[in-house]
Image (cartoon, rainbow over all chains, first blue to last red; front, side):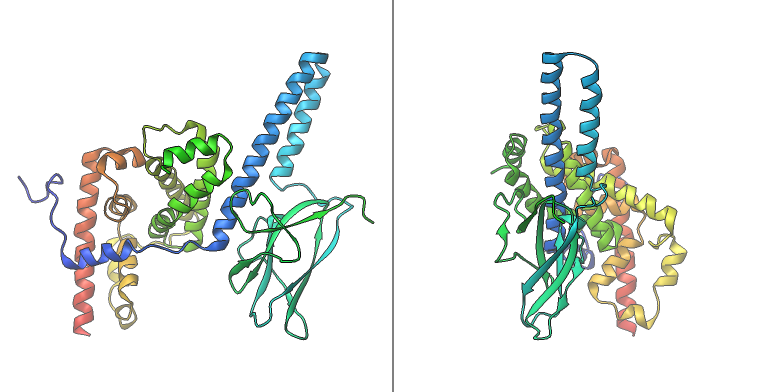
Length: 184
Length: 182
């Protein structure tokens, strides 16, 4: 057989062996990346469940009432839900500023992250108060349920004064704020 | 709990089951994507897209195939797409031999740590060889699994791995000699 026969596995020399060992070293999974992935999965899961429910409801309505007019309504509802899930809905006029305040004495950088900006890796930087203990930020949010967390020097923290995401669907530590509609 | 059982649980509506799959496979996915793409941001995007696609396609998963193999098939495709996009944007990864020679000598390069040398040597490999080498020697896939993941034949994959090993050996030896001479 020839030396370059690929069926023959040559023993690896030490330098290459060491290189492979180095390449195999485990990588830490960035916490915020994990949160972002699970948030996207959660969003896809919710959209899928809604689509199923709407399809079922529409099918039931069609069976009960009949008539082609209902088909138009079903598709328009589905499109609305899909656009909500993809985050492409414009901020409605009833959106209003919400002030986030978090105690993090000694922190160098605190940022607000949440599903309202797709868990952006850097988040929205918060302002340190004069006493250096609390961090503040105002964000305009539309009515609805919003999951959020604070990124304190690269570590995700939930807000102890806010409701914890009870279901914590996919394991992302997050707090929840619910903005009621009809505010002025 | 096995991957197969977690997939079944996820399909039955257990959201935490998919989280466990993410936690179990994310380190390897990020490692492979980082070695393939070089840039961590690109690697994170490719791995994120992989898990999202896997979740959306979970019903099409065939339990006869190991979940990791199925996931890596998606990941390899995402990495290839990312490399194609990058090639259209700009040519960042050093590939041609002349460029490798250009990158090799110099005090700055000699100061690189061992890991950087490996990353450099990997980036100097053609994409197909880099992909096959990483799947075989770093992710420890069998050639049968690699056939499923890459869509290439087993003998072609063996040849790619063999060439990659030979080329990496040469590059690392050259770098070692340069470091000793300095």
